[in-house]
Every structure is written in structure tokens, then in C-alpha cells.
Length: 364
Ligand code: XIL
Image 1: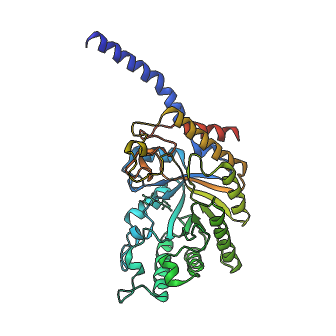
Image 2: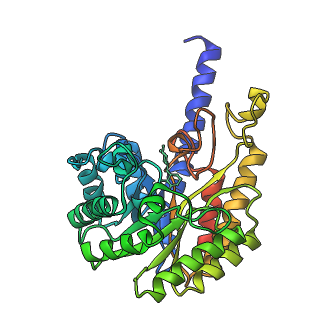
Image 3: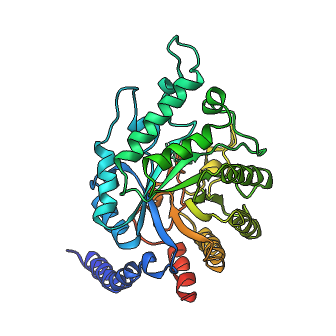
């Protein structure tokens, strides 16, 4: 080895020795040990994680979280691809992953307009499906899927994203074919399939007053019909500046006024500009080589503020779930390079992780 190379090697070794305990110390702090009583912290798993293939991710998930959600596996398309065919192999592994670790296992999701195969909404004559046929399909689906995991899945997102931005019922094939009572029916069937499971309604953009009002109307209508619902999931796909902390807090209090548990079910912070068509590609994807320090700090402050609200109203919040483990796993990349989570692409904790830890430690 030549002298300059030797110097570089020695410096690198010294840096590694100096950094290693610091990194190790940071990694030994676990979110799950810092959460207040009654609030669980979880993460959405992709299939490589629930299959156990991504072993580094499995270790990190096991160390940090006490709850898991399935990013895709339990949606209609993957679990029930054809009328006469269910797929349970990878799905069973997902549930077992949580059971083995005594984690709270969530089911996502039974009735949604997206990621649902076309056959569900097709009638026998090739036209649109009729009410009775679709109700029968919904019933078979819910009884089969919820029934299979009875006693092992703690809670289900029974209906996902059924309210439009103006607060009306979203015009989905479920609504078109069955009518307004499809949501009540879905909850009643899920209750029948597993009376012990918690049942939730889940949606995004709840900080928008009109949409939130629509969700609250829906919840109250279910309650007035004697249909039990246990919680409202606020997806919490948020950005750096929006919604404001005041809006997040007001939304929490409004949702809580229904008497239901409030959960943050898909938390992430999108740092990329809204992609404008024809825009300069580097402007649309500014952090390809990494997140600059000022943005790291801004993300850290954002997460600290958000957890500040959760802690201030800790009695109202039963769960916080991140939608993905590390930045490499996030659905928000979609061909660009996003940095929305607490761990970076090398699965190292970001300043945002430290900021959340600090807020949680301060509240203990
Ligand atoms: C997303 C997944 O993360 C992606 O992998 C998939 O391609 C599309 O769906 N709201 C939801 C989640 O309820 O199921 C969505 O998950 C994100 C938006």
C-alpha cells in the first residue's frame, strides 16, 4: 500500500471506529419502547419483508415496532384474484410474521374501489353487476378473508376511501351497484365474520373540512343504525407544509368527538414537488443524490411537530403506522427519489428519527 493510501485507510478505519458506537447507540433506541401507554407504533410491510427475504428490514421492524399493516397483500386483487380463487400463501406468512412477534396485526382492506379486480364488478351478461350479485360477492369475500384470520387479525380497515372531497359518497362501482347501504353491509358482515376484531373506516385528506364532515356523517349514520364501528383511520399522507399543525389538531378533535378511536394509519411526508407536466425533470426530482441538510432538519421538525400533537392528545390516538419502513421502500418514490420516512435508503436513522425519539422521551 502506498503512503497516501495507507493514510486514507487509517482515517477511514478511525472514522468507522468512532462512528460505529454512535450508530449502534442510536439504533438501540426503539420507538416501541418510547410510545405512551395505549398508543402502538407500526409499519406497513411489503412482501419481501413479510416473506422474510429482506432480512435487514425484518430485524429493524422487529426491533422498532409492535404493529404491522400489509402494504398490498390483503387487498382484494392479491387475495381474491378470481371469483373461484383465493390466494393465501404470502398472506398467511404476513399474518404469521406478526403473530410470531406478538405484534398487533392489521388487515387492509376489504372494500375499496382501487386494487379490486374487474371481475368483481362484472355481471354475468358482461354488463355491470347487479345489487344482489355484488352483495353476495362482498359477503363471500369478507366472510372468507376475515374468517380465515379470525382471532389473529386485531383490526380491519373494512371500507377504504368511500368519501369524496366534497363530503358525498364517492361514486364507486360498489355504490353504483349496491346503493348507499353497501358500507353498513360491509361492517355488519365483517362483524359477523369475526365479532372480536376491531373494525375501522379509513380515508385521506381528512384535514379538509368538507371531506371530514362527510366521514363524520357516515360514522354517525352507522352508529344510528346500530352498526358497530371501532375506529377512524386517518391515512396521514402529508406534506412538509400541509396540512398545518392546527388543522391536524382540529381534525383529531373532530374525529374524536364521534367517540371512536383515532388512528394514523399510513403516515409519510412527501417532500417532492407536485409533478408538473413538462416541467424541468431536475426540478421535479430535486433530491436524487440525497436529501440536503436543511431539508433533513425541516423533515425532522415536521415529524417532531406531528408527534407533539399525537402526544398532546394521547388519550385519543390508539395507533401510529408509517406507510413503509425506509425511504427505499416508500410508494412515494414512483420513479422519483423521495425521502418521506424515518430511515434512509441505507436503513440508517435520519435526523427525523432522532427528532421523534426526542419528543417521545420528553413526554415520558
Ligand atoms: C399503495 C401501496 O403503497 C402501493 O404499493 C400500491 O401500488 C398502491 O397502494 N391509500 C391506501 C393504501 O389505502 O393502500 C395505498 O397503498 C396508498 C394510499
